[in-house]
Amino acid sequence: MIAQSFQYESPGTLAEAIALLNQYGDEAKVLSGGHSLIPMMKLRFASPGYVIDINGIPGLSDIKEENGVVHIGALAREADLEHSALLAKYFPIFKDVTKLIADPQVRNMGTLGGNLAHGDAANDHPAVMIALGASVIITGADGEREVPIDEFFYGFYMTAIQQGEILTEIRLPVPAAGTGNAYHKLERKVGDYATSGVAVQLTIGSDGIVTAAGIGLTNVNPVPLRATRSEEALVGKPLTEENILLAAQYASEDCNPSADLRGSEDYKRHVTGVLVKRMIKKAAERAMAS
Amino acid sequence: MNKTINVTVNGAKHTLDVEPRLLLVHMIREVLSMTGTHIGCDTSSCGACTILLDGKSIKSCTVLAVQADGKSITTIEGLAPEGGPLHPLQEGFKENHGLHCGFCTPGMIMRCVELLEHNNNPTEEEIRWGISGNLCRCTGYNNIVKAVQWAGAKMRGEETPSTEPEFV
Image 1 (cartoon, each protein chain N blue to C red):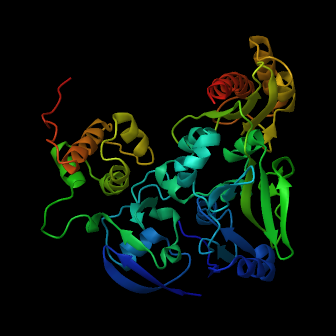
Image 2: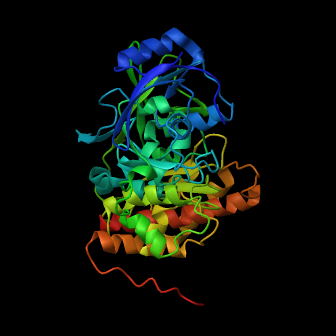
Image 3: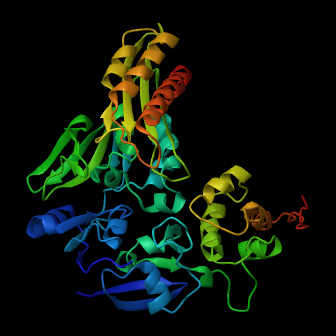
């Protein structure tokens, strides 16, 4: 399969890339890892007139900690996330999630920024970002703006990124002591989109009371979903079996999956509940061990 | 509008004038006439087109040739010198019947080159996760796992495991 003809640009600076995006308007698409865009172009679901390859722009793939915030450059590859010692220290969830994204070759190309900017609720990182309380930096001609992850996803393939803008960085608050996080998805085969996926981050005080909870759901809603009622069922209380079951029940009630080859709506709700329960327990284990 | 790119393929430098929509796998097979890299699914699922781009295994059906500008590519043809000794992985696949029809083999081997570079003593589980992006419809994977273990042992300078077939 061959994509439709397009003009290829490989700017060496962010300013140049933004200028090109402004010049070409909605005829242009940004190319990062390319493992969503290129398949869509080959299938002719997307036929951009201009492809702006941002891979040659330096400084967009660093992973570093500064003043209580972990900064991840938008061009950090899945393989970089998988092997980052800094991320492993605070966020073992990245080892959980990257292992389940596609396969090693795709993870050598695919980027975190691209995974989010694609705006697909079937992608795995959106739920993780929701659980971790991330924000994203979007850069345009007028400078950069920080958008909380809860205000980032608008709809299917639609995000807060406006014409002439590029997602350049992801920021994660360094979690407090006593925090654990975990992700799992049910998939039919290695590398498949999730039947359902659940990301959880919990902070548990020395008195056993849950002080913070983040729960994000993959592919069971038109947009990546924060399971707000499930979080509320946990915060301010000890982590009892009863509260965990309640959180699981709320998530399965509050999501809005559609039936497809991966299962019926009821099945997906059920799986979501099971995964919420398991990921809460796994995150809690890691919180205790931290 | 065509673009001029500079690529190093198996050590040889090439300057090519390519259409931006030309896929890397087509550049390798059709422009450079190296047909060792196969096209299977053409949708980044099967891994037959796996090559090394700056040392990292990637699926060349989902990368544009222009993205390889300034980079170094290794294909199956570049693993062993013409007429010289085989790469331990090539030898391992041969010794352990790691292939039947051979269609997946170049991609499988190129993927495992990177796998063994990171860890030359992988567990069976690590190998199976490591080749999770490569489909083989013949072997059932068992002999591929053995081939990779065999190559790992050879690369570590240890005695290679017996290649006697298992009868079940």
